[in-house]
Image 1 (cartoon, rainbow, N blue to C red):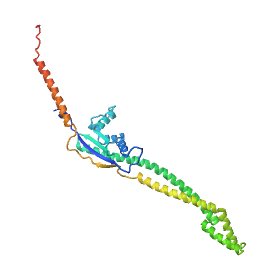
Image 2 (tube, one colour):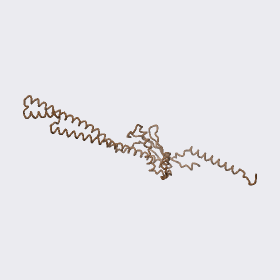
Image 3 (cartoon, helix red, strand yellow):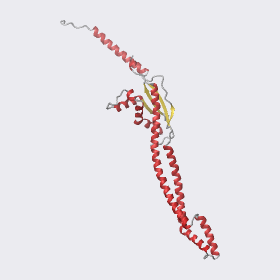
Length: 289
């Protein structure tokens, strides 16, 4: 039978759904991005190397067209497609049902590794930039704090609003009691002059500092999130259907076997007729016309 010459292949199928943790790299849907990544040469190469497909497909690595041949065989036996339900279907054909299932399972693992690497690179870049922004803001805050400390120390301004109210009350009382030339009156007058001279700057510096502190807190939160995302070890393709070793061959199909058997039978019949006709044909005798 012609089926004897065709090695049966077993099919293993898996379906995965993109998780919400996938970073959106473009305007494509998450399923389309998943399909793009899983179809990448990097993942195909990992499968080829991990399962030594050059040996299985009988393709020499020394062949100048090795990559062309191995990828052609890969694409003939392993396929990826997006279903109508936004899942990604992985199908593997192999003469060994257990290996077909293992390849299917490994492809999902390689997909997770690839996306995890892409996310890590992206978020490590975010971490680097965010750390720079955080350091810059911290430097600006420190500079403001140094100036505020100088004003507190040299001009004894700690709380502008409270001090302004209290010193104004004290000055009014001193003036009312005509004690402006007393030591206490002179001290109040000095404080009042300090507030008039440096109070506006003190208030402005404090407002700038508070604004920068709020910004720095937001950047710190973004930094923590980026660090967390860069170090996450999660699954990006949620398994809807796990691959299992098939117990029934998928290739060749019954229709193909029937077609090949019919073709072989017809070929043998034609060959037999030709042989019979050749035997029946009278042989010419030399010298006879």
